Length: 550
Image 1 (cartoon, rainbow, N blue to C red):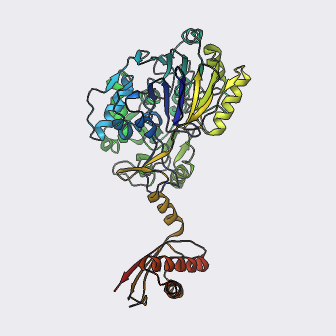
Image 2 (cartoon, helix red, strand yellow):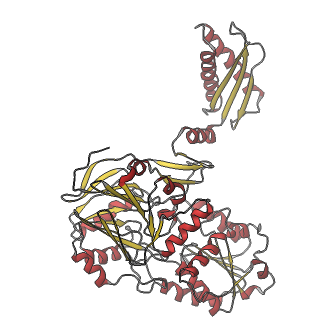
Image 3 (cartoon, rainbow, N blue to C red):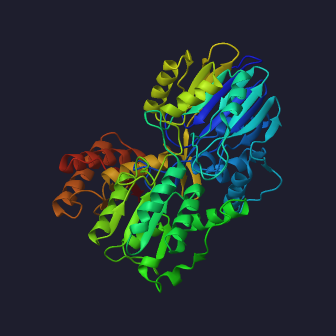
């Protein structure tokens, strides 16, 4: 690893720079380091069979006792979802505010992990001191309770790490920092701001949760039949709104989905949703008039195992749709989920269910800042430099350009693994740290581009061919070769099997001319069979040969 000069404050993103999700950020000063956030993301089509994707935390693990703590800004999966999988191997305390720690305790218990005394609850807006790092939690609005920025003070300079945030004059849940509080932070002198780039492309304000509530109260008052609303389970402010909508429209409320039920309970336990209406058991819903029921359910991203997907496909034990019912998607489409959501939309449309999305009515606002909010925050904080994170490259580049348009002369757009000097001196890359991705594959953590997953990608695209041979000491076949083709075009055609058998003979002849051993015979046959398959069907199946010598 790069040698870092003494008395230098550095920033090393291990996840979340160049992508949405997997936020993991390291700050180092002399022999002390902290990790800010420990997030995950979901697999894509290039990850067949994979459950979850994480940043590779080996850089942090290799720091040993130099790593002092993990500090969480909030409880969203892309900031804390990797905690049950990665944090236990770091052997350091974990800090977060009450709702965040409650979520982490639940996640860790789900994985049968011993919690010990390493989870530390910090009051909202509280302070902690970890080695040379003095950290203040700064409340900002977001789409989950207790979203916080971090003011990180060090001997080299002060850093403002925004976490996920927005400006909201009517946030429903929480009390974000007032402008004068943020101005006072700016007056301390901020060497660099590490900032959320998710909505940096958007030129209009993100909007207010209070305005969403007003729209829902008006919109849903006229809905006939059963009303189903799906939203992000972590958006407690939206859940609070939906509870009030149910009361205002005279509907009994039901909640479907484990994550929703859990988050409502955790929110109540930490002081939120105090006037949330009573929740019916799902079995009671089917006995009530359809226009007297409102259901909040999981599945706003079309997840096949979520409640909405099962109801839409008439596969739910207790709940069903009839023509004229309404489903409202109080959420935005996360990039990559368009296909699965489209399937749900079509299943609903086929049954004459009314569909309302954020494109049809003002029923969702983002929890991330757009350009007007960036401009206001930077006017208060007045950072000397801006380092965009939490975004794809187009988001971060736009963020950097926008910061420069506001008069911030220094920007640096990092990639995961960059070692970036923040202070003193110019903000710039001074080296590289190991950076990679991990995949939860069954019960194992493996490299995302490791051999098993790469092989699976190839199998998914090309299929496989397995050849079993029995040969004598002279390399002659003792019996017909056994050939198993799976996922190969034409795999049941007798002509193709004959072609493969001829390729086996060709491989044996070539190997025999070299007086080959069993391994060499197998490789010669493998190449011959794979070439024959490619010429026949245009695919390059994963081909393996087992040679038995008698």
